[in-house]
Length: 169
Ligand code: FES
Ligand code: FES
Image (tube, rainbow, N blue to C red; front, side, top):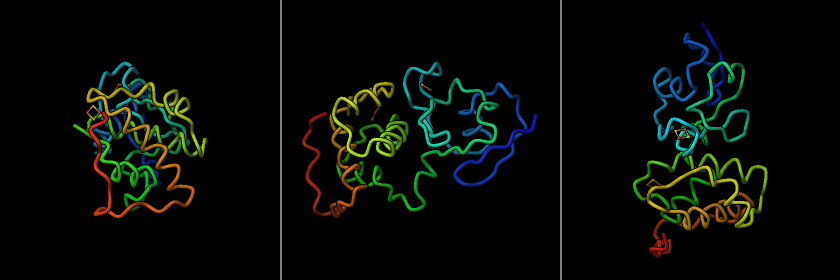
């Protein structure tokens, strides 16, 4: 059944069963591999993308629910990799193995879009569905705050002037 959705700003039509999870469509039909498969049961957040601007898990979302919607994956978060979240993640060296991080960043981007200056509690609440086996949670929290600063106009720190990660994860 043909289903049309807008992915990273481009209209895409896929001919798939309507119950196919959106994650399958993104990865296997549209070759957007940045969004990851983790648990497959809406428990880990690795598959998080934005659907109409809201962070959503896609491993259990039928693609038919995204028909006509605007879907943004990590590949489309910014045209040049310079979204505030991407800058902050790089500045603070957040990823360890990296597997969860696309989902974490999509969750963070959605959070600061609606909550420009999130508290620790708001960050924890927004991202508590995003698990990290490498336990980078403290760096993620710091990076969300840094991303909020950058988004509000605070310049990113040049690569050579970045502090060490501090081993706080
Ligand atoms: S793969 Fe979707 S929540 Fe884990
Ligand atoms: S960085 Fe390894 S799972 Fe999060």
